[in-house]
Image (cartoon, rainbow, N blue to C red; front, side, top):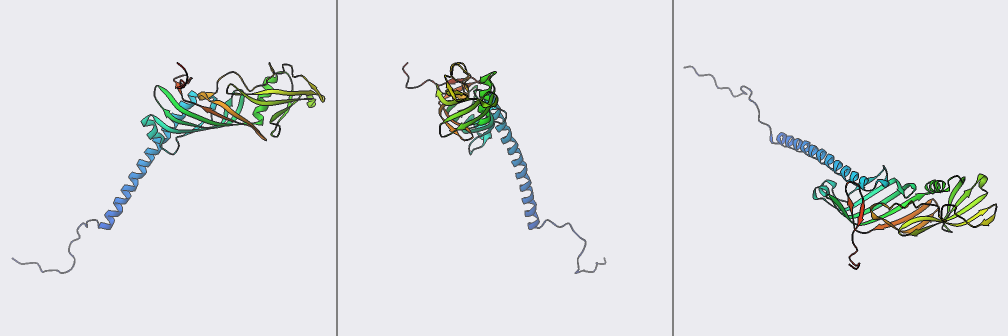
Length: 260
């Protein structure tokens, strides 16, 4: 048998196995792609969890308005929702209603929120800014047929000044007060053409809003009110209580120090 001559050069090409460097690049690309998919899924889950929390707050406190946002402190909303407990919940709104006062800005914090058939809250703190235009809207609503002109605040005096009648021939001075955890504006003085008059029932009982008798959301009660150059600043706090589903009614927890 005749043997083929030995060739020292390259023979027929064979399929090369991936080099270690190429395999490393492929592994890193696959890992990066998987990480992106997982991140996208987690992001979608986190967004859904935040929306669920927001919708529950909106049902419990519709007065917080359409611009309501919710954030679960520094943690994950998805994790908190899965555990049915939110250690800290921060909410904000730019179109809340404080009694008859519209378009108020709210920044609130809820501590130790427990989710379930009913939702319990350990503590609530809120700061509300009521702009001058909202004060004007409340005063005009309370004034009825009486023409109301410019409404402005006097921070030094701690009052709200209201021009009445055509050309502002009358002037009404209102002072914000807190009674039973609610803010209202009481009549301090009334002048017409520079002459002081007794403020007889200008707003049904000597007070012109903002108090419509309805409780504030989440059991909040006003603790202080300050007159600013651009409106009012109200600080409110609430103790432990329960939000009932589905109507969102608030039930305060019994006072442990109260007599049985």
